[in-house]
Length: 339
Image (cartoon, rainbow, N blue to C red):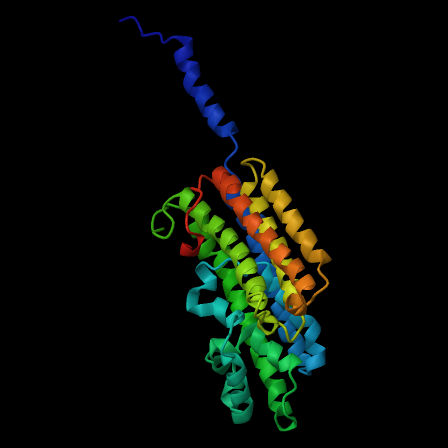
């Protein structure tokens, strides 16, 4: 029998196709976002809260802890927009930063804790059972920037230690989940046992949702709440007003959201309109000399805050079609739906 001789092209074609598959770059958006943005963000939050807890163990005086607390708050804002997975488990995100709090639930509960002086709340187990409204960054803010009655000073000091340690524990647990099981779900959609994310598109949409929702929170809450209405401005509703961080929180958040947008676009294409919109919003925030938005009650100063709010809304409007198109996420989906 004469052996069958295949045409050389028939032999080469499969090899050429395989080579193309090996040479083609994988879409870098999700790995880039996780590896170069999200994981470093959570590592930074873990380190900052660990430093805060260590500082509290050494000296729980309010003045000694303001610096480490502000560093921890900055670190939280690098990942605060990621309301998915580990931050939602057990209500961690609320326990870390319970805001808005229009009824001052946290303030009333903090006052009640100081009055009761229950030693059980000073243990790790006890601190973890405190209401989310009185834990985390805002629980500590009240204990650092609001003078407790002299009779409660000693307990307030110990409560700072307990809340700082509790915050560090939550940060470390979230980082561990992102490095391990939750990060694996995002990196391996559709893998055996992964019923959370079935496709890469689901992961992209989940992360893109966090970006849009983060911009909405900056515009509608961080700026919208103190703006109130023209006839009834509400500067007292600004976030972190006691510590004077209201504008800083917007500034740090915008930087974190810009980095998320850039990492999601990595390897997919350019996002010039989104980049320009972020640059304008960040420039306006940098030029706004109003740390707690007190100026919203004055027409001239109010206009500057409104222009910043509009710039952040414009950033969302630019990112939705431009970056959403690169990611294959349909423009117009409701970002409040989340993951």
